[in-house]
Length: 117
Image 1 (tube, rainbow, N blue to C red):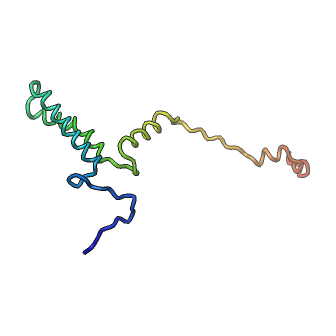
Image 2 (image 1 turned 180 degrees about the horizontal axis):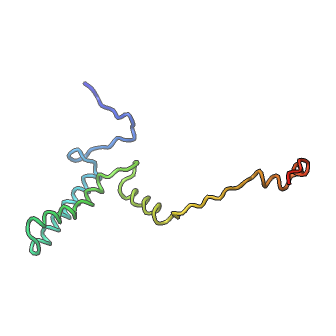
Image 3 (image 1 turned 30 degrees about the horizontal axis):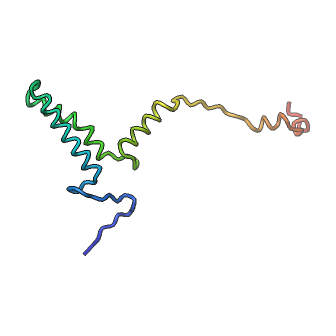
């Protein structure tokens, strides 16, 4: 009998329902609920083919929320980090060099000894 152990213990995810974690399962239920709501809401307006595509497009963001992982961040943490980096921090970085040797020499008596004018 062989027991599989993750090389990185922090990557362990407990599966609760159908091999999904609780977060994934709840977001999948939410995606199904949105798809069903959109289907019954738009059934009088659109045909069957169009409703299917609209249901998929409406449910996709909710399904993505449960399964998205990027650098150990879930979707909410990633969107917050993206918003901070793109909108709250300045894009233009200005580099100004500073010659510390020249500043030190300006206030040093070595300058007069070497006659470096």
